Amino acid sequence: MFDKEYDVIVVGGGHAGSEAAAAAANLGCSTILVTMNLQNIAQMSCNPAMGGIAKGQIVREIDALGGYSGIVSDRTAIQFKMLNKSKGPAMWSPRVQSDRMRFAEEWRLMLEQTPNLDFYQDMVGGLIIEGNKIKGVKTSLGLSIRGKAVVLTNGTFLNGLIHIGEKQFGGGRAGERAATGITEELIDLGFDAGRMKTGTPPRVDGRSLDFSKMVEQPGDDIPEKFSYSDVTRPLQKQRSCYMTYTSPLVHDLLREGFDRSPMFNGRIKSLGPRYCPSI
Image 1: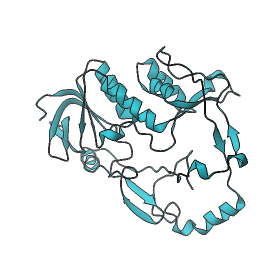
Image 2: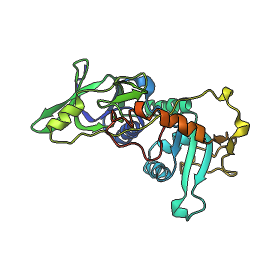
Image 3: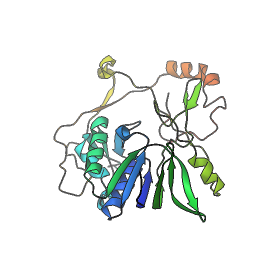
Image 4: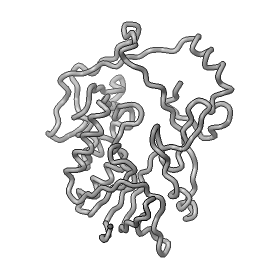
């Protein structure tokens, strides 16, 4: 099936993989993006936002280098806010809240319009190694794809574990299996492997909430945008965010369950997240 050798093989179709595939293809490299589910390209798994402190500067740098993240963020934003305005300009950090479904759709449309870029849906289960050099990848269906360079952008999927309460099972994110095989081969090549942890809080139906009891956080009065190009425009209409707080009663309920929480009872041995702990 794959009788050609690609210049670049990108494994994983998240935000990093999508940018890597676009960058390689736009440089004139024959590129293939291999991902487990083509319907989930560039999906926003958790917080539907782009940018923020430090990250916003990176999105703008990617845009200046010809990347797509800034354009997609502008086209699918529902709120724009410049964070850290009380500090000096070097600390100002752009952030958008996005329509997560439109975000993924726009990313896929832009990738499909990119020349030199092919797509293939399958799990990469191993690497083709010859003479201590990576020459391609092997898929779970037994196919080999050869390439001059392989870019691994696997996100949370390599031997991923999901913890929900006292339950634990393999997976990259809810409803999607973990990717196995690559980690073991990387270890055999001399790389170290470890685990990191992120937390995803439960979603609630906005129609069931009383927003009058929350603190409204509107977007900027004069919104800017991410991309330096003229293919996007600043937002004309924005949606507000809302902030709420826990209470001593909630804290007591949480403490009662610490002995059952995998973060506290030792089942999770990796470091927790710094900025997005979940309840």
